[in-house]
Length: 292
Length: 239
Image (cartoon, rainbow over all chains, first blue to last red; front, side, top):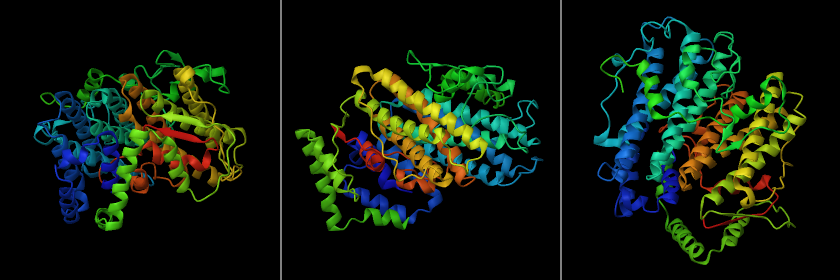
């Protein structure tokens, strides 16, 4: 973990990071010396605590706290979804090939995100979301822990929602450049997850679903390319072909037949999703009394 | 964690370098001598790339235009690479790989053209690329280069996002970087299945596996890494 690098990067956008972290540069040494004694697993928490100290709740703007808590809620959901799939005794499907390893990698990242955000928020962190507060089957509609293809389909929904959610909140983090960069670094990891889950779905065990690693147009030209109509809200607006008033087509070389131009334009840019829409999606998986 | 310690424990010599870096930064700030950066980058580049005859491109990071031109430069590089691959894919490519490289080609063209249109008259010129280090007949060489470009692209956007001052520009950067990350994940899986988000291997680009964080690099570092692939001289000022 190259923390020196992270700090250096933050320094580029926030020249006073070191002063924020501690008025005395020398004190940084103390942190790294302490770091030596902290186990690797505990690092995200320590890192988060350090950022909290730097941009702590006394100085963290309310809007930033809101965004980070919103992100934390989503990370809790993702973490529990994968963690239960790996450890739950009610999981009846078997993991083909290297899929368990891949899901473990993703689960570990989501856990790291939870710890990082919790640490950054400190006392302002929202209450923990436990697995008991969730219902990933949405009242039994999605057999996510008995059907491997269904598990992957919903995972794709989670990851693509996460990508859209972080993107939608980035603007609110501009007041805290260091935190914005961290959020961007989480955002692209979620996109990597999404790409891999989509590839897992395209395997025979995953259901041989015709999805690409990137968000494309649905088979009938609709915004939702997942092949699961229930995921429509996740992809609402993903069929946009205009960015910042600029039309992406015509694209030199891209085919004009079979929506080729539109597909290429749709795939080239992921879309944001506003908070209210993300909350609606997240709430599907939270039990009454624990909704966002 | 030993590395962390090593990194921090600066010897007196390293401390001097750190101070010198600050002086350099101050110098650049007051003198605006971006050429010094180019000279320094060039000094750190072992291979002699020869003398360039074009006038080069200037990236002025004082405002969003500079950042968008920086993105435009990187998208030009990526687009040129994928156009070359897609026009004559390595024989070792599967049909699926040929199809997806074609897809990615369109995406990168879309990004390039978007920035060109958005920047209008403020856009830098067309960059000359140098892909002499890539064997376009070899699937592994092409995949390796694609991985380099995509991972670097992700780190570039992540490291530049906070420089943007206009929210709409940040949104656009976010809309593109996640597509680049999808490319990176897919290309990585073609090389080593399951390596889609091997953040440990991305530590050099600023990633942290323990934090679940992707790469993020400042423009000077990204441009230094991209330099072997770009013939056009790129001047950086106000970074």
